Image (cartoon, rainbow, N blue to C red; front, side, top):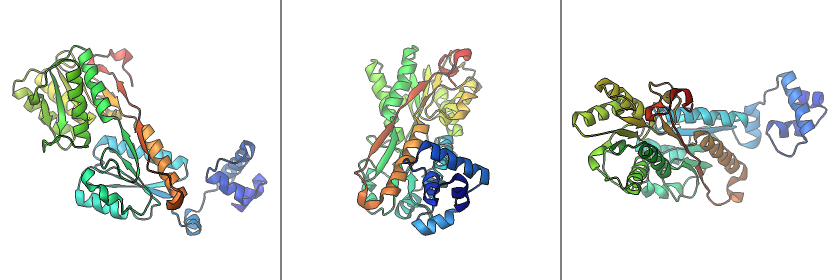
Length: 343
């Protein structure tokens, strides 16, 4: 740092301010310091920084299942945002296990300054667990609404309604949905329940009768399970002209099963998913989907966590909720021409 300061003709403190991306540095001074950093190949000593500040310069991200491409791509987005802020990321998965999620919530991830946590098995009844958290925490997803912590989420109900409206606008009326929770309970705040709610609301608004036989329970949300659920649906002989998959992995499985059965997509059966994972661009036909704002979720979640880490408990504001913007991505599986499909 002293070498950088000498070359840039600034103080050590100014170099530290630039490295830590503090805003109150003159643009010309910042540029001069960055040139010196690049010329000298300077890299901050994170261990020394941690000893001085009591921080590690590393944040944690805990997700349910990295086999679900959405969470893998979310992790990639979080890592990219954190790196721009000079932070490292430790990623852990709870493997959809309640006891593991409780342990993560109680202890955080080791050697991190704070945690981004996307629980799957914890629910509103576990809100009290949040009262005992003693480290900076930002929740992702729908679980544990109303807790004393920041929360970054997506528009599950509205996004699902938009997906079904997209199918209805294309004349589809017998719309199956893949991914309902197997326990059959309603009124929960799980992604499956919220997206099913949006599905039902869209049908009701369009005056389309709700057929419970078209709601198919599937778990976990992996392609093979989407394919198997679609095969079962077709074997039962139910009339279906569209499929709304509650995530893209299930939608990819549905495309496979429909192709095996000789159904043409979208001529015979249109298909739309949810999450806008990158694989959906390369299926044949390409998969229409709902983009839930993953990059915005990563950006806001990291920013909120960094603020919590910086403020400390004494100066922290009340809990905040941020809902990312979403949009429908129309591709070939719902009739968008190949030459104009949105990538």
